[in-house]
Image (cartoon, rainbow, N blue to C red; front, side, top):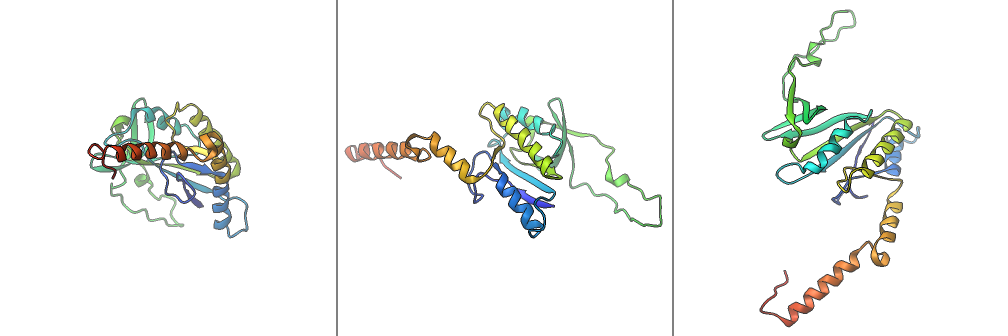
Length: 217
């Protein structure tokens, strides 16, 4: 499968809500198949930081909703002092597996019909309150084909519309379209930097007139 680690910009360096760029996803599938296929199975990983010391409660309902996506693989996350693999939710609790639990290796023998699969399962139900998970986490999704990816994008876009400003994921056809939209929506058509520069100039002017009161770092 192709792997797409979603980020906030084309270079993978900007913060903010990660953007699922459809053109990027298509390119990763094409690169993975060396140009032989238009689309391949795709693993989407969406790293997020949803707070400082603890998770911002605004994001909890949105995280719960991601488990309803048929493409959901769960969440790579943690709790104080430990890593966890969140596989589902029930009420205000997250169900998880412990990735550090040691299991017996399974010896798969084509001649035997009685291979034990007990180590693929767990007899212990582990859960943690959602508001106690580490704010640094990654949402995992698996899209088996293009239709599955389109369905994921549709669900993610709907979730963004319902987020009331607490975005987890946004979807865009291309970075060029996203930047053009941002430019059109900002004062002066320059992504909003003009306002920040104007404020900086005002501060600088005041600093020049009141050297004892201001120090610019």
